[in-house]
Image 1 (cartoon, rainbow, N blue to C red):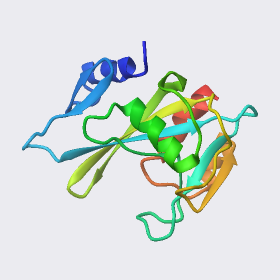
Image 2 (image 1 turned 90 degrees about the vertical axis):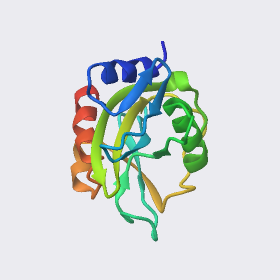
Image 3 (image 1 turned 180 degrees about the horizontal axis):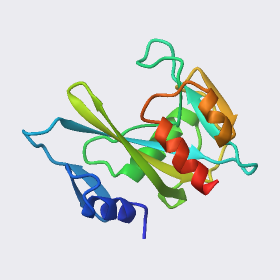
Image 4 (image 1 turned 60 degrees about the vertical axis):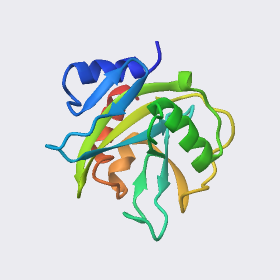
Length: 166
């Protein structure tokens, strides 16, 4: 089964209580008692030597200069895996399929009027050479060295999840 099944299991276990889940998608459900949910997908692209690709947020954007896992927003009606495939093509000019994505971990963070859920996928296979199309720079980094780079708060706990699998 695809990666969506794992996220469905997380939802069933109430780790993401404001989402309705089905095997291949996450559907946002408006809830007047809670902040809106913002679903973000990101990739830990792992090089054959074990280093992971990070991108530097561009000047003029929120958290400019911080190093993050590449990815972006899940659009309305879009499956998380499809969103990540699209984002990586737009941001890095690489190609991959949803079958190349392995769900790894997630983090949550309150962001003003919304609550962000960041889904991290492990990616070991893609086609093309990553290019910084939407970032100031790209850097291949060993997981143990990531703590030396300034990162958005939601990305920091995901580094610990990476350490367990790399």
